[in-house]
Image 1 (cartoon, rainbow, N blue to C red):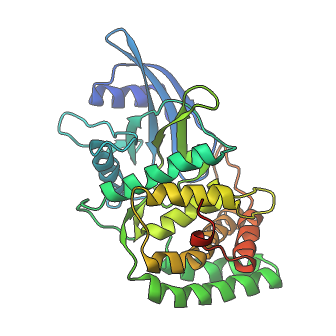
Image 2 (cartoon, rainbow, N blue to C red; image 1 turned 30 degrees about the vertical axis):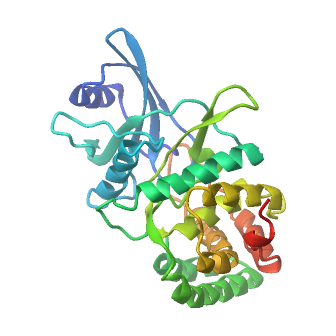
Length: 327
């Protein structure tokens, strides 16, 4: 992601030595995103090349990180395709680089699918449900740190930077979500990814025959409703990016594939339109915050906040009920 922390080859090799991962061949900063510092790392060990991702955590603390890293390890052990954190000789997966918390994880094969069709949405929908089920017995707990309490704190901070019409929408939608949360509290819950956008999923294989190879970047994960996680996905995987309008064919296929693994309850179906609005609001707020109150980084391109404003307005104007659109 954005490079906030420069890592030297000597620092990288020292960590590789601690993890017994071989000799450093290349270290390349990753420019996408705005939360953490990430590097692609290639090593050689026993005559073979191996690829990893080194993450330096810029906001999350040493105390918060065990939840994320242990969740990844838990999901990997359950057979969910996620990057496994690399342990040291004492089986510790949280490390230190330059005085900051760090982790080294496997690099997933393949690439992103930035123009998904029904075929890709079905795979991600079923995979998301499997991930939710696999995490139900995960013993650690941490609330979604970008949930409703964070929205309450952050909306007043961004209001001075937006137009009167945008301010009205933010405050009205926050009030709507405060009421919706009372009913959503009883929905099935557990560890969720909370940021499973197209660029956090990998597919591998020939064009038109790609297979899901994994989910990554769990560093917004937390305990929340499974439905909220599903709605985050629908708002990215199943929309027209220019207008924010939901593609009902893709969305219906996504939900149908999800329900083939974990059927939604009646309450989940009823609250889905409202949670689609919640998922849009969450990312509009965070993008406004990142855009208007950025941190310095050597490579930093904040996302356009108006995209999720459009998505939110679409979800309000055209509520979507999955049961009416399932193929």
